[in-house]
Image (cartoon, rainbow over all chains, first blue to last red):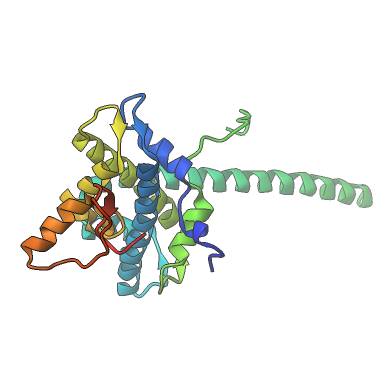
Length: 129
Length: 127
């Protein structure tokens, strides 16, 4: 459970930075405007979560997955986000796979090393190869 | 990839993951959130912020400045933003509010001092 109100709000500074990326340079954003953006973004998270969860539940799942979120964009009238989200999902999956592969590779290397050491010990025990 | 040493992996998202997760979990009925879902909500929220900011700026009368009123107006005008309408209400002036009430045939009881000042206030009951 969230401890305080702040926990349920996205940080103003980060939200402002994100907003400024699409505005012309040197546009000043008023203090109340910054707060409004952050509040709106926080509520958006809740809104999308609720929509996504409803879709997951509809499909008898207890876990919200990526496709639920994408489908939720259609449901909430944010179709224009779908394309970009799909691209991001592909990229994310790729990164996750690369991470997994790296871990497996490391494990194999380690196992290889320990097997090597084990077979050396065996060689000492059985002089005749 | 194993050979190159990246001192810092390129960040995939800008909003703090843990905070986004906390907000998501505070939603009733949510049981579990997959990694991909968390990631996409993060990205979607980023897109939303930029969408709202751009939309508000296009309405802004004073170029070079983005005000609360621009955001409130943008929210008012976009159907898909109605979910935040109550949170970001349009503001009005006291005199306009009186006119509005008068048009509806309602009077406002208040303790007046001398002259009312044109104070901006929110029409909603929120702070």
